[in-house]
Image 1 (cartoon, rainbow, N blue to C red):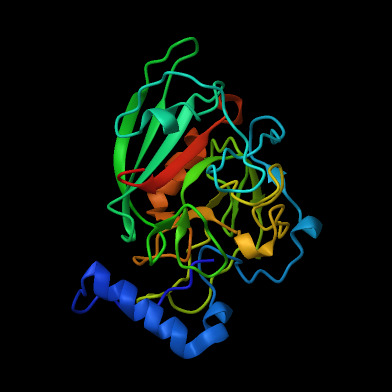
Image 2: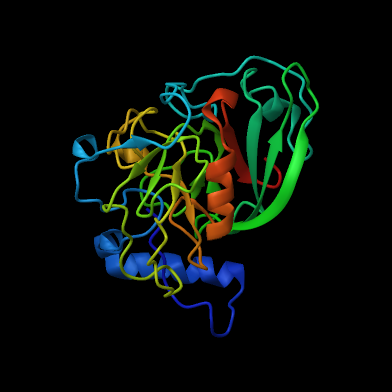
Length: 277
């Protein structure tokens, strides 16, 4: 999960000084840092996800499509080579978007070390290669930015292309939710974030990013196919006005909109990384 440290409501530090202070704090407190609840590697959920009650809000059963991960990730699945122009993406990245995907959520960080990003949902009609952009939303990613070799506790978000198949949250699914949705009281974030901001409500709505997880299961499922060292529990979730430990966070109304829009039949994926990815 993304555990976060020191309040941004007061004097705003530069992004570089924030990253340095976060690193210094993790050095001082050592493993105690990972006892904080947040967003990114492990969410300190005490309930076994496999024993919880899940409900599909609407749409078919969860498709078990593998994540399309960075080249450096183990067991990375590859999409077919295609030519689908989406602004700001390199040819290599565009060619790794699965051919059957008609919804692509593009998360673009300001730079490799920034925790601020923007998000655009692109959609296309069947039998068309023309991607139509939706609105642009502001978001937060991990406190230290991005990495193409994510490991547990590095405070960086994993670069790559990942399928989006499962959702859940502490609150009921918004009307019209299409992804299978696990309404579960175990989606709770306690404590404060990297900048001292409260985390309450951060997991009211979550969409699992299929980085090192079992697609077709609750976001609470603790299984890590690539091993625990590669981290996990990387979600889209409600923004708490600060950086995360690995997740991408958006405002509550945006999360509700995404839950109503993302459709398993359209094989949604997220493309995430810094601006030069």
